[in-house]
Amino acid sequence: MSFPIGRALNIGVQSKINGGPDRSILDKDIKKYSLVSRRYRNRRIGEFLKELDMTEGKGAGFPKILRALKKNESPKPVFHTDDDRSYFVVELPIQPKFLQVTDSETEQVTEQVKRLVFVISDKALGTRDLKGSACRRKSVLSALEKYSMFHFAGHAVIEESQQDMSRLLLSDGALRVSGLFGRKIKSRFVFLNGCQTARGKVLPGDEMNSFSRAFHFAGADEVIVNLWEVSDSHSPIMTKLFYESFSRGLSSERALQQAQKQAIADGLSPFVWAAIKVIK
Image 1 (spheres, one colour):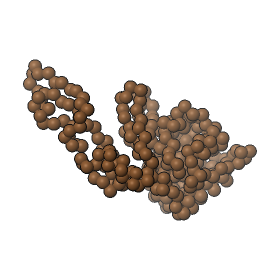
Image 2 (image 1 turned 60 degrees about the horizontal axis):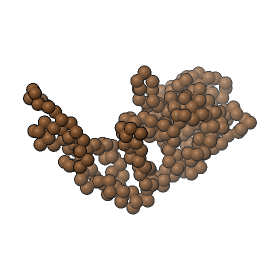
Image 3 (image 1 turned 45 degrees about the horizontal axis):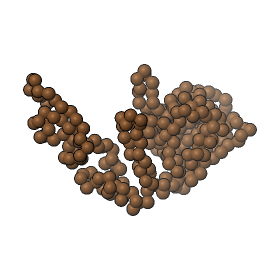
Image 4 (image 1 turned 120 degrees about the vertical axis):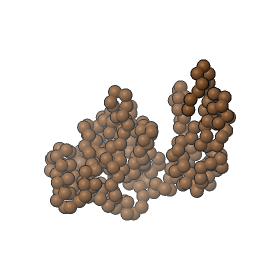
């Protein structure tokens, strides 16, 4: 796009929404050399609309979304912004019924928990198993402040564009990266066995905004994460091998190395045994 020399380009903001969801700049604006930003639309909303059997377009405005949420008995949206109003986020909570744990998932999680219970070092406090509806945000935060080891086996959602909104899904909502900063936890060992929990975003100064950074800031000495998504059938295999080695007094790095060697000997794919990473 080019403009004649000597002509001023005026860029303004107009509150009136025109031009449909995918046209924030109109041809008539270009002819007038005055570009008006009329609308911003998060492309990811398309994935959310599919859950409501809706499609993108003029008929998928927020009032219609609200009606669909009400019909679906979903929680009401939550609106966020900063003091300078430099960004605006609409949080659409997941339908609680969707988060109910099935029997098959519970069996897989239980296998991982058994291994953690076996190697837990804080015998004075014992162990606490939070499954299904008991895995609530308040209970998880309480456990982090009380127990020296924390193992999460569940679903994680990674927000590429806004990493502080990445979250671990719980029965009553989520534990976000942003919710960990400023907290003090007792858990020095944290194992986040969820999809892509190693993912993060590089910040100015070469720092990383991620789950591992948030847990380290909160007080963890080591955080074990997944580099990519591993199937529910294979994930318990690696956690079992890891905790078997860890229970013999090996460091987390050595325990993971031994687990990987055993997985290779057992013929497992690198996609399975190379997914786990220890961050200190």
